[in-house]
Picture 1: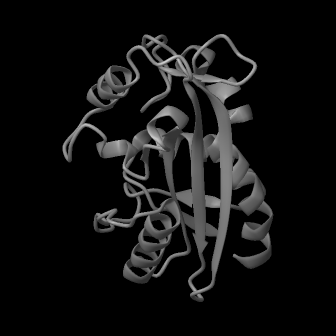
Picture 2: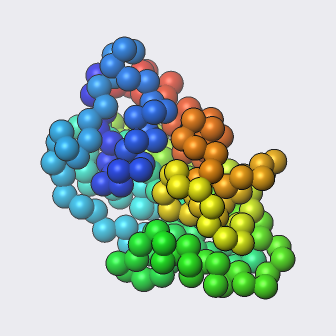
Length: 195
């Protein structure tokens, strides 16, 4: 069974490879390094729209079953921003560091720093069938970046019940609690039924 990961983000590829069952269970995970595919513009207004667009376009282009996902950070004090625009919060060609800096600037002096990571994953089957699942990780935004693991907003996101950021907790703990893990666990059973 072959499943193409429909992302160009190396952090997301690594997380999916750590969370999805591998070849020992009969699933061969493919990446853009294995099967070339075009970049897909994420111009949807929701995670769901972006994830479906990526999965369908990559699946139709390559002929493979595809898992694609869109995720973002929602901050209560910012009315849910940056949301689906998390990767380009500080501008179209932004970096993780600039996005984090803009977030901390907008939260300067704000006491209620409640936030959540939200993920929507889509399994596109070569038959055209879609399976959509959602995951969430609640927490708060720290005042300064801490830790050097992970990517995106991990250095400032402190999961509920923790004192360390995701970037300090490291990949093993992050993969046990993450929003992406929740999505992949929900989809994993379906993969073996449908691929």
